[in-house]
Length: 218
View 1 (tube, one colour):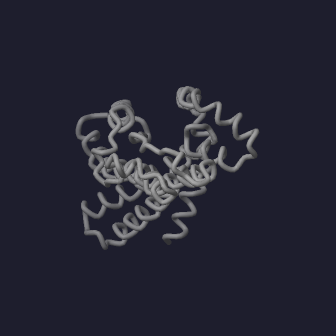
View 2: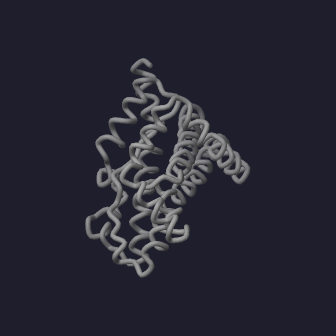
View 3: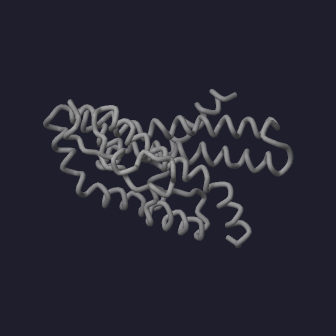
């Protein structure tokens, strides 16, 4: 990928990606505060300032490497907000709601970006190159947010889906699944490293959600 193409991709993808990972984490923090944990708020992590949430690897290094390699899609993550379940009245159940808040925020953002793309395509966001730029940004925003939501809902602790599953399973199976968390990151790395596997796992859900959002907007 040459320099002009890289700069064009950055100009289109940077804003949707930063909003996606920032609001994902802020949603976790807001949900935690709702259930009684103000840890994220005390550390200034409920801010919409992306700099508060930047992870050197997930926010900068991984997207940059994917971009330089000409990957068909960009991916990344932010620094997780701190959550202390000791402040929750029902720690296991409340943690499930806190975990689900991040992917839910991404789906809401996907719908918002779909509306941006539709408006741009209809000419409401400006004609010519500006309209095309907004339309492309809208498509990237939909795809990245849906991808982030589906990926995070994989049932592997410490991903959000794993924590949601721990919160709803009976106590015995929940404890067994929770013991996977120290190895969860290695499992995720293995899934990412096997070519094509994530596409098989995530593809059907991503396509279903994108088609559903497209029908809602149309």
